Image (cartoon, rainbow, N blue to C red; front, side, top):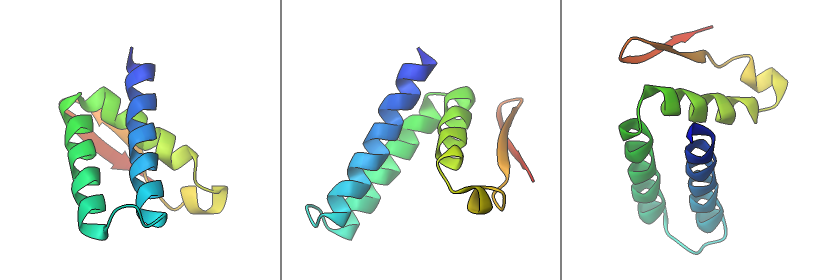
Length: 82
């Protein structure tokens, strides 16, 4: 189930970005959509949030990804490590 949720959240984030880049929505609408999506991701729990963050980080080119800390679920929240 978490894989499905992760895929749905990633698709929504990409659709929002694509709509903004295509000029289908303005920046204010884009940021509101992204904020709503991230609120839903966080409400889904720390494990889902960590999966989404990991998937986004894994999509970055290697040289960029290495400069971002990896998310790690610790207790009730996320911790980041380099």
